[in-house]
Length: 120
Image (cartoon, rainbow, N blue to C red):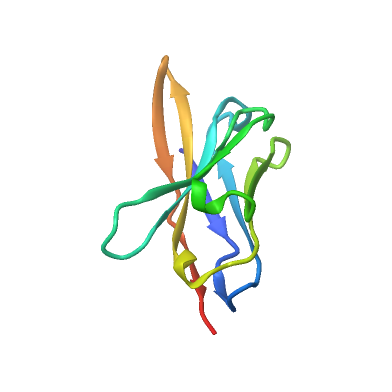
């Protein structure tokens, strides 16, 4: 079955950095666009960044541009989110999402989430 396992979250001071990882299994990773979302309690889940199947192109939410970088390794079936210059407002649960094509239909799968807390 499809599994997405995030790791790398934690507590970091403002201005610090974290690197999130999401390791996938149960589907052909290189066929699937991947993305990172985040959710703050009481708010809707929002897109952070997404990346194409080959990793040749990525898109970012405006507030993350220049600070966050999404990348992927199709040999290791892993997508990454490098987060720099973190701010307290980046505190959220971060989720990895895979768009898996099955029988011609795009089906979203989510990881369990990893908590990122930015605080002094």
